[in-house]
Amino acid sequence: MTKIRAVHQFFPVGQGLFATGSVEFWPPQPRRRRNISIPGQSIPAPDGPYRWVYDCGSSSGKRLVTNAVDDLKHDCQGEKIDLLTLSHFHNDHINGLVELLNEIGAKRVMLPWAPLWHRLLIGFEQGLRAEDPEMLFYVDPVQFFIQEAGDGFEQVLFVMPSDGEGPPFTTEPTAAPGPPEDRDDPDKPSGPGDAVSYGDLEGAYGHLDHRVRMLRSGKAIAVHGVWEFLPYNDPSTKPDDPFGFTTKVDAHRGALLNGNENERQSALDDLRTLYETTFGRGAGMNNVSLMLYGGAIGPWTGQRFCNCECLYHRLIGACGCWKEYETKGAILLTGDGNLKSAAKWNSLEGYLDARRARRTSVFQVPHHGARANWHDGLAALIAPTTSVFSSDPRHSYGHPHAEVLRDFWPFRPVQVDQHSGFSMHVMLER
Image 1 (cartoon, rainbow, N blue to C red):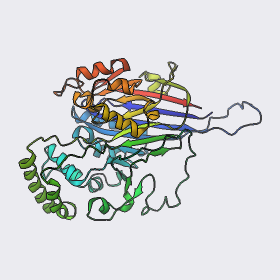
Image 2: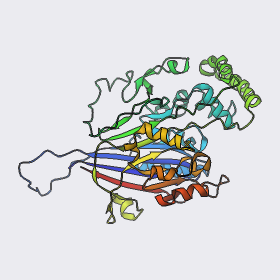
Image 3: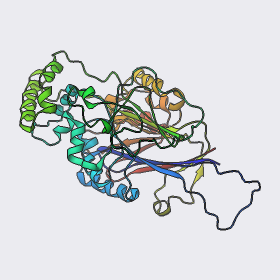
Image 4: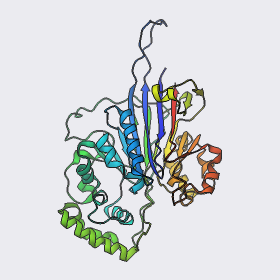
């Protein structure tokens, strides 16, 4: 029998988002001529766990993120996270990023591609100044990771806008690929995505090619040949630029990407003044948010789950309350994504393929349950087993909004705040 064990977990970080999980795979055992039980024979170890994280931040308190990072560090047992995904660049989703990379590390950091001028708009919207260390993340995320995390990451994977069709829906798992021949050569890229010079993306320097890759539209990340992570970078999220802001940013591109610290700060000061003059403060230009689907490849049966927080689960990962369910097993994370119309959902569903979308068991409700990122009837279109609201109801934003909560009420809404987390353990068999 072949098995997959998947864990979906949300840490209690209040108004923010810090989701994580793992995937383990038990391949089928070689057939024996006789079904003989051998006393003392141990069960083979699974492949994995493959560990993933989606966002790492909070506006309810930095201590909440630190506590969650400490818990995850204990679980990782000295191993780096396999995939760290950043949905977008808002502080309540990324302000624990440096701590996470330094304390645990990540083999691959995946984030949505947005051009320099768009990233700067987002940074200015956050109220950042030229001298703020975090501003470098918006100017040059690769250089920011190098400066703040050092060896805490191995690769940056930019997800390009998801134009056209998504990956084909595969009906059968595929054999896990063997290690690449050049895996031990640090100057040769490996893993998903295409090798690309960072200069090709930014029009600046072209070194560090082996640490930068590009995931084109229609591509997914396969895990052990039986699980897939499929990102969606909504191609309609790039804001309009009626005032030619991008052209003015291009005039400062050399100083921003290749200049020294003083030159970069001077350019940022000029552009921030231009931003405030052109758009005003708090222009609300950002609606980019990389969504992420994670689910099994091919047909699976005998699914079971338990999401209790009892002592047995915390100690040994299982307990006596496992129950048989026809659960779907997949997770769909949206960050602060925009699903404010049926057309938005149809675009996402079309890219994923409706057969994948129907497998969504855990759905993270976009933007902490804000009405501006939702439309009436969205919950019924998704029909998840569990709907997670990652928010702090006592925060000034007032998330989740009542009408969004009512819409998801039939689909087991769960509040994740600074006091309560959530986890689901899924076992798939075939």
